[in-house]
Length: 102
Image (cartoon, rainbow, N blue to C red; front, side, top):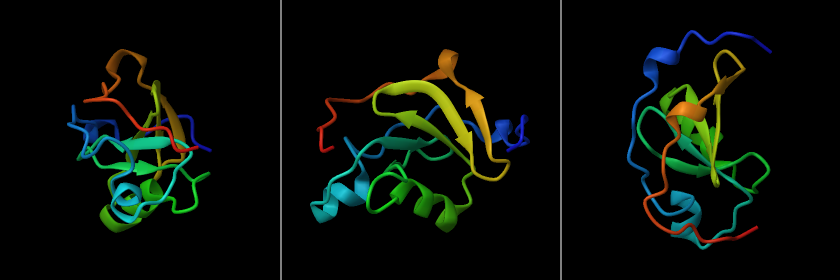
């Protein structure tokens, strides 16, 4: 695991794409925790969830950085550099109540 990330320049202030995992909501599936893409705002489920939509979003788009989003947790992860990031000063706020499905 890296201690630095070469993709910090890709972090944007984003608008969440959904009030929960976008794909899970569409298919009626459950998730464990949420992640938000800090490039485009896609909200997907974590790798502990059955469908792993946040990781699938990375593979489809190559957007490198996600943020822990359930609740906004203040950490990020760079898929490319496999590095944790401190986002406590730049958390993405929820845009409404998040349903609980765990």
